[in-house]
Length: 375
Image (cartoon, rainbow, N blue to C red; front, top):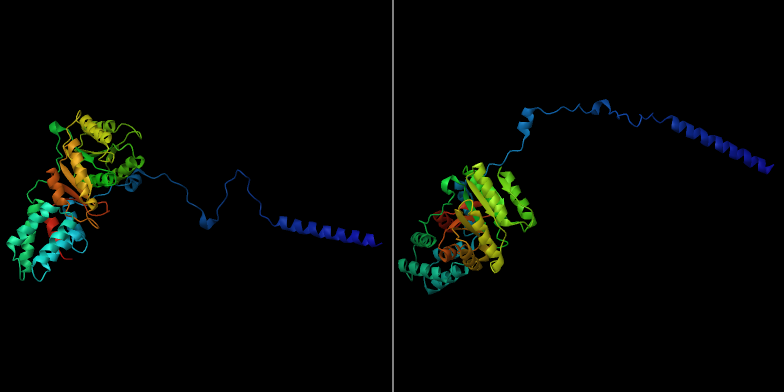
């Protein structure tokens, strides 16, 4: 009898379970067939897709950037050269703030200028000229001291030097700018910024990614070119740099562009084989068109070490101009004078920051005036 009771209880439980399952399943909405599109609620339904018109495509197309005009760049960047930021400027202005021009003042000025990478020879010239014009002892008129200092600095920097880029090729072929320098000077970035300067001056440009040894170099250059609508000629990674440069110049001639700018691998100036290869690139280019400008990129923060780089590069290729990068911040600025004397060629461009338009044509008077600004 006891077993019968448990059988009845189990049967009742089973009936209740089946009834509950039936109710739950009956409440589920009917699903559409697997191949039928799911319907969205009326208030969230997406509109039907329509192909854009030609006018809409034109309006939404990516437009290249318009770089800042070169003539306005130094005005914007002068504050980065001022005494508050530049050790070279601080040394110069120490003379103007001195109560008396005694022997200690002149010694301090001489030491600060040498520390600022002006070099022993130019420093001696500057100090002797200033001592000749100003009183050796007693008070100094600040305005007169500043005027004399400005004149002597301009004389050292070279106010009448031709610093224009030679962009005109012979017989209608493009001008060719070969850009060289050691690793870490910011050479590829400088070329991208140079392209912006040229485009702002209404020149048509082709860039040659002849640094085939650094995997990211060609992509980096292409990014710069895309931003201003400049074509970049590339080759296979690890390929012949001279071949890439040759092809870029050939394309520049075929397309009738104004300027071809050639990037090269950052070369350690102690590596003879790599330097020989740089000479080869120049020779191969000149089968198609003369190289009108060879720019040596020097990191201003390296100071006097930049002179050693300059000497070796000048032996391999005829350097025609210098680009000083990273002149703001920790750079001392005085390197401009000795590096020009070492090569006998001018500084033509200076980099004063990391912005896309922070490369500017070098102007001696603007540079000196910026150094003598106290704020």
